[in-house]
Image 1 (cartoon, helix red, strand yellow):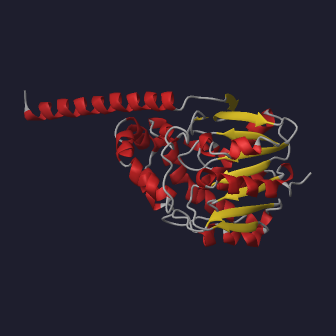
Image 2 (cartoon, helix red, strand yellow):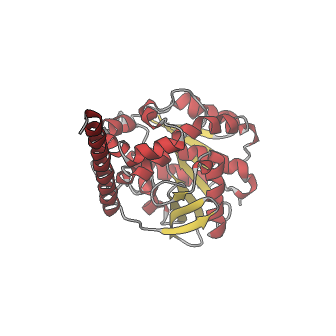
Image 3 (cartoon, one colour):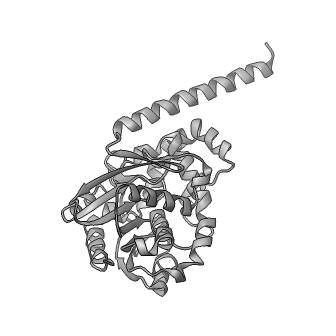
Length: 315
């Protein structure tokens, strides 16, 4: 047997081991964070969601950020808002247990369209759209798509403008073409992500400490799957051109709403991403001593903010 043949066999063995390990970790993640809502088929995929609270209350839609899932709102926001509102929390297309059929559904405009299609199926009228981080960018696109159908918007540390180098911690996600990210997702991405989890979470939560139950209660374990890497990579690659396109239209915003930002946000700049939105008719508030993950570390303050915005909802 030649040296070349031995090297090939070793490489094949390593790839097989990575494939098996990745699939095992994916099953463990889904066992830790099982599906709890319903799946609704929409053009381009399906959306996993829960619909709780007062059926006749003001509808509030909760949309999470990059590499997230609906469990990001499980630290008090869903429970508290459901006392007086109809609350729809969802996994963005491709995230959690939702499905995204291809790279074509990655732009903000496509994600916004798919979520509107879900809300149409649920017969939701003039909802208060709540978006955290990248979810805030999706909410802005939804408001631009259907200004008359949007009741109000509440943005929590949102990404609103395209900035090169935005979110340096997500640089490993900047992978294209799609076939390469799928290969990486099936082999090396998950083991690498597992090894760097503590470092990444420390950066995402800074200056606050990550919650010790974030993998389970916060659903973060679902990101440690091939699907999680592929979706997050697609989001990271698509967000800058999407934001460049939509930020040119912010002058068209005509819905009531506001921005709540963490003053010590370590991922996004409060001034260039949040405060600037005052120029487009949105209110602006900050929370001192807080980091980027407001729905988790400042759930009560976020809930109070959403209630304030909901009071401005257009009838």
